[in-house]
Image (cartoon, rainbow, N blue to C red; front, side):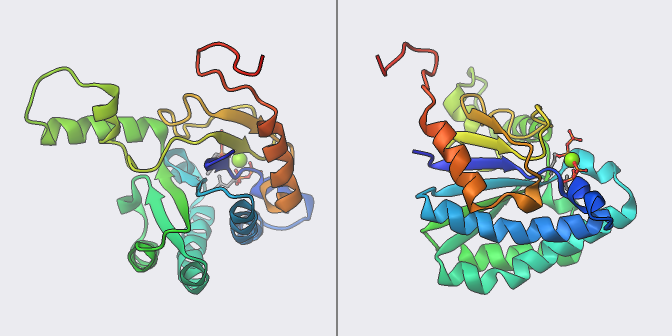
Length: 230
Ligand code: IPE
Ligand code: IPE
Ligand code: MG
């Protein structure tokens, strides 16, 4: 069973280019797809979904594209609030979200606060997120807050990450076909099963998700131990 699914939502730009549209149109179609996949994930019994929406490296993109993405983030958190309340979904974010423009930050905060008590499903959006930034932020927080100089354990270190209460992902899906992590969840993915599909994110639907979940069901997760299936 997949309890926590993580997704690198890649391929919006290629999806748009194939249709002769601007990249921002691809991002708009991609933002829509998040709701489709949230519904499909809930149906499949998944409890946590972390989606990579904007990386620390994505700030390098042209200003017009970054602006369009920030506006989509604002729109998404605002327009989905009612749905999230109705469906008992809690919204969270991870990343250096202080770097986002104020309108996006405000509407995210409003939805995060309003949905904080929801218990059915957690949608966690990685925004201005980098795996290395998360580890460095954790170390700096630890240096600031920790009184003791005793050796740090993995369990204690984890408490300084962005979302220590969210269990590690069981499965990580990347759409758009690239075989790389692109600075996503470096700590948390250590034993996640990986699934890469050529399907571009705006085309990734319930059937595509179920195919990935079937692949996961056939995996033998050994966590460094010995085969349990035989
Ligand atoms: C993923 O789609 C969304 C973000 C990185 C914000 P891309 O914009 O990377 O799409 P491709 O990879 O160029 O097709
Ligand atoms: C990864 O996609 C980041 C997100 C999906 C938000 P990129 O398109 O930025 O990754 P690279 O540049 O192909 O590694
Ligand atoms: Mg890409």
